[in-house]
Image 1 (cartoon, rainbow, N blue to C red):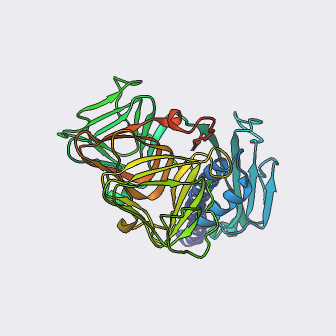
Image 2 (tube, rainbow, N blue to C red; image 1 turned 30 degrees about the horizontal axis):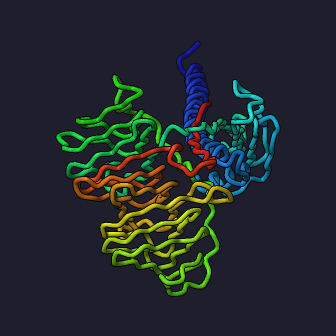
Image 3 (tube, rainbow, N blue to C red; image 1 turned 30 degrees about the vertical axis):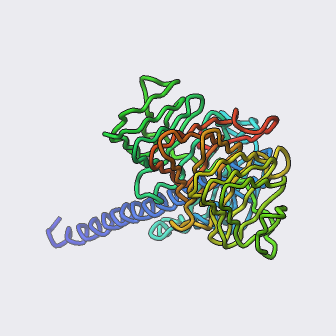
Length: 414
């Protein structure tokens, strides 16, 4: 065979090789796109499972919470929504499945877990040449709602103080020997003159110093670092109705909506049981007032907060029933600037029997040498201690008798 007869064969072989190479190139590009979509769907499924688990009984709205989390993560609407069914392997559009309990896996049939599957038909590009026009991409996540009643301090948003979830100055003492501290920020107590005692200390960020820190339940592993960030254990709360605010009359204290509450002098102020809404104006006090009340809840909105700078004596206890059982101070999460930060102090014997819920603010505890007071539970953006106070976190033991305040922290398990 002559060289002239072989030239066409080389061209045909090269063309065939190019087709194969283009096929591999197209496969690589399409697989990269599909893997990217898979990551997006997995992040959305993880968030939806955690949100759904956070709304498990005794609360409701598992599917609604999961859908809201999906929308936040770029999947606002499913063409098909399935509940309590097996996760599909083939779909024609965006299909979301929310199961409680899960329908598959090691937690199948266990009611304390939520399974979320996100499946979507994704188009291909280069692979269409080979007859593959689309591919189903799916992601699955399972989250559980673990009862975390052993913790009495949560710092959820370290951005409120930069990177530290707990910031202590002076010679303050934070005492929680029978309950835990959950810190979503970094942890740095190096060189401090203060003391921290807790059953456990869990840190999601970086620990750069642990001077004067004692864990009564985990003495050799204190703090525990690298822990997953905690979700908001009180996210189920819904704000109370806000009426037209009126001026506060210290001579006739009744539940209602006020444009601020201001106390001064050395008198005793008794708050009858009920809900007190502060709309736009804060709860302030100076002097040496005594503040007392049983079965009360204070709700702060429109920039309001708790700001008592005097040498006050506080003895307040939360409601023992209803939607705000165990909740004493509650701030609208929309308030997330430094002007919303509450300052909390109290003389020896002062007591806050209930949860202090300021999810986006820095709670500042203050006091002088000899100042000590008890607080049942704190859920805040961050916490700061100033001066020389002794803050005793009492946990569920510090709630009013008979109060059942479930503290949950949903985490991924699959």
